[in-house]
Image (tube, rainbow, N blue to C red):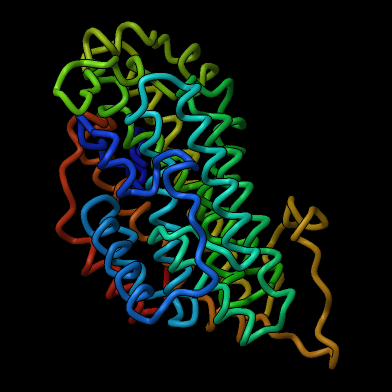
Length: 383
């Protein structure tokens, strides 16, 4: 499939323009003053309403996550819905605020909300209510300390999104991989933690797949972020500022090698010299991570070693203890968490469509085959 110029994701759909303050409050993005009223417990009706809200957000804002949620273990589904909806909200912030300062204020609101939710007092806001319900169920299944990992990963996601609020280009391809590790791989770690499933091999697989997903998301965002900014409308309809300036997040070292200039992409779009060469190089790295994950999975299922060490082993929340009875649970862990690994399928699907468009992200067509690809991967237990 990957020829000389040949070489898949979680894209971020553009947020609606002219978002009013009232609309932001309904989404849970208003100030802490407006939404800080906490509840000691939510009713079943509250949880169900929150679940419907999150599903609706995913269906219309992150359809791939909406499809994938059906394939994650049922015990992790509420957490998945809440966390993916929150990720969608965080990813939209640079598009919906007029200044990075306002965006960072809202990031702090979400940090405070997460701390309150894990402390047992979630604000009356749908993401928090559903997340608190997932935490309660997790604690009941696995004990009072089981949610610690989930909170660690979630705060890391928020902090990383905050650091990239201004949509500046990545300094290098390695920096893009670090970003992907701290966002998309971290989302996968959270899904595993909400089961809970702690496994060095599942985390290792998730790291490679998450890196591929994060790189793919950056490529998918090129046509959106490079477009001219739009005015933000106040309640009266008058312009109160503009959204972010046009941005190109491709790594600077790759752009320099390809002879690609940001301003050329902003002015010429797909006709910018060097764009396809730069996209090809970045997409190749994403594909390399998917190939590595597939080879690892094949080796592990054969009872062999993964083939290389996990670079994050020994870091915080990546410390693993062998089974107390000395048994190797690798096969069982892969079986339990296989649905989490299916994040690789939308990433691979996008890369194939990008290849068909000769690595022009402006010409990538939509995918009607993704549901079938997910079904096939689930049936064949392959990624």
